[in-house]
Image (tube, rainbow, N blue to C red; front, side, top):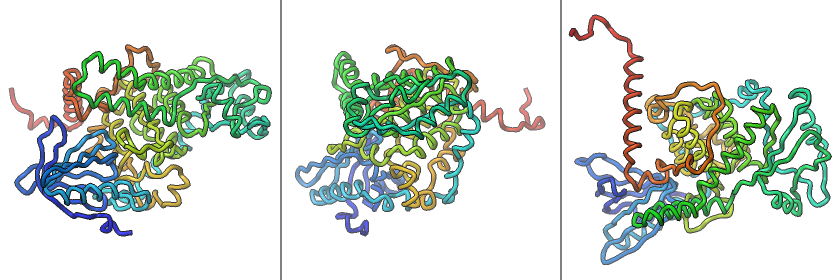
Amino acid sequence: MEFSELIRTGQAQAELLRGPEMPPLRGTLCVTGHHLLLSPGPQATPDLWLLLLRSVDSIEKRVAGDAGTITLRCKDLRVLQLDIEGVEATLDIARSIEALSSLESVITSFPFFYRPKGLRLGEAWHFHPPERYYKRIAREVLLRSSQPLTGPQKLRCAADEELLRAVLAEARPGARGFIVDTRSAQAAKQARMTGGGTEAKAAYPGWKRLHRPLERGRPLQESFVRLMEACGDPEQSMDRWLSRLDGCRWLSHVKEALSTACLAAQGMEWEGACILVHGAEGTDSTLLVTSLAQLILDPLSRTMAGFQELIEREWIQAGHPFQLRCAHSAFSHTRSKHEAPIFLLFLDCVWQLGRQFPLSLEFGEGMLLALFDHSYASPFGTFLCNSEKERCLCEVRTRTHSLWSGLNQPKEQRKLRNPLYVPNPLAIWPSVEPQSLRLWQGLFLRWTHPPEPSEVAWEKVWQIATDQKTEGSQPTDSASEPQP
C-alpha cells in the first residue's frame, strides 16, 4: 500500500486555532503519509506547524457555505480546529486524516521512517540491561507474575511451588512472604471458572495472600474519559467541577495504586518480607505496583538513568501491551475493550511522589509529560508493539530509534531534569489522604487553562536554579573578571 492512495487532497488554505492562549495560524495545509503540516509562509514565525497524524484521537467535521471546519482531538489531550476553504477540500482532508491516523501495520508507522540528525540506529537500545539492576538488588526480593492457572480442578504447579520455597529459603531464616493479588477475592474466585485462580494456601507454606483490588481495563478508561469531559467544560461552576472530579474517581485510582505500592514496599522495608505481586495477566496493575514500590524504596530508581531503566525493565521488557492499551486516549468515539490508561496512572502516581517530595526525584514534570505523549504517539520505536516478541519480529530495535537516545540529548535534558534534586538515600513514603493528592493540572489542563500563580513561581525557581548551575559549571578566568 502506498500512502498516496489514502491522500484525497494534497493541500488547501486553512486557519488553525490551537487554543485560548495561542494565536491562530493561517497558511497552506498539507497532508503527508505521517504528518499534517501548515506553512504560514516565509514572513511568519514559526515557519512550519507539524502534527504527527498518529496522535489524532478523533475527528469531527462540519461544513457551511463554501467552507468547512475539522476539529482534531489529540491523544496528548490537545483540541485543534482547522477552518478550511472549500467544502470538498474539507471532506477530503478529513477522510485522509481518518485513514492515515488509524493504520494498523506497525512497520508503516513513522518510527520506521524517522531519521533525526545526530542519532544513529541502534543507539540506546541497550542502555538499560536488566541484569545490572538484578545484581544490585540481589536481596530485594520483589516478584511479579500473572495469576496461577489452577482452574476448577485446583491444579498445582510443582515448579511454582519450588520457586517460592526457594525464595524464602534464600532470603533469610524465618523469612515470610506476601502474595499481593491486585484482584478482589471475588474476581479471583470467578477467574477459576475460566482457568485462572489463586494459589492454594497449603501448597505455599510461609506465604500469605492479600487482596488489594485495582481497577483495570474499561472502568479505568471510562474514568479517564469522564475526567477529560469535566476538564473540557469551561462554563461549569466550582461546585459542579468538584462534583464531576469526584465522580470520575480518577484520584481514587491514584490513591489505591499508591496505597498498594506502599503495602508492598512496607513489607519489604519494615518486615524483611518477600513480595509477589500478581493480577490477571501480569502486564498491567502488577507492573504498576512493582514500579511504584521500587521508586518508594530505591534511591537509584529516582535518578534520571534509573527511572529510564525502571520503565524499560518493568513496562517495556515485561510486556505491557502499549499498542493495545494506548490505541486511543480520551476522545475516541470507538473504544476497544483492550484500551486502558494504566501507564498514565503510573505517571500520575509518580507526579504525586514528585510533588510530595520535590527534592528526591532527579527528573521533573517535563519527563513525565514526554513519556505520556510518546506512549500514545511517537517518532521513536520504544513504545511500539505489545511485547518483546512482537518488537523482535518487526525488527524495532534495528530499524527505529530509541526514545532514550532522544531524551538524553543535552538540549532535551534541561526540560526534563529537576534542578532542585538532592540525592535521598531513604525511602519516600507518600501520603494518600485526600488533601495530599491533587489533580495533575500540568497534564490534564495544560492546553486549556493558563498556569496558576504557584506554577509560574515554580517555573521561575526552576529558571533561577538552572541558570545558577549552568554558571557554576563554567570555568572562570580571573583576568577577565569585571573590576568593581
